[in-house]
Amino acid sequence: MNDLEQALVTRLSAADFVVEVGVGNRPGVAAALATRGVDVTVTDIAGQSVPDGVRFVRDDVTAPTLSVYRGADIVFARHLPPELQWPVRDVARRVGAACWFTTLGGDPAVVPAKTEQLPGGAVLHRAVDGPGPTR
Image 1 (tube, rainbow, N blue to C red):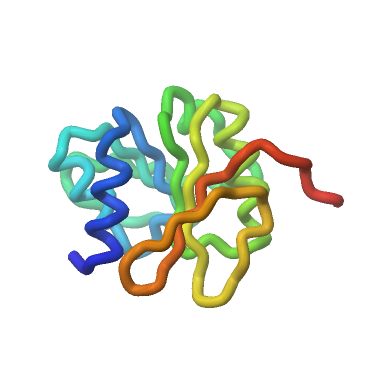
Image 2: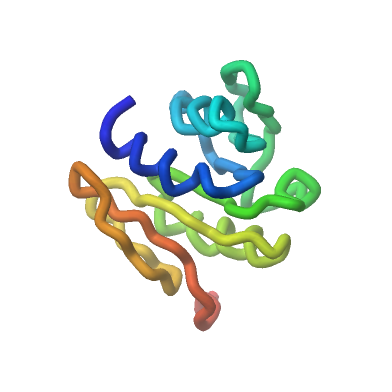
């Protein structure tokens, strides 16, 4: 596990239940959280294999199955592109969870968020209340 992943695990491990959106082929953070006793569900639009202790649900955050996210303390995503930030933030808000995410490369946070610099130059964004998108 690299320094960035370890930093994410350290911050997320204070939660009881985390849902990671769009896990893709990167289940390392979810696996580490599960070994620390965190209840972890990961989602993706395509089927994925996940480590023991991690629950996988096929879901599209733009048309979410809210029951997947209910009870989560944090809805989290890594490498979240701008076009999915509002849907992830909205799902978290609808179920009463915090919304945390990192972006890919130079992508900005387009939802109002507090930021924290992480190892390797990554930034953890924690969504805060603010105006909705202009759509």
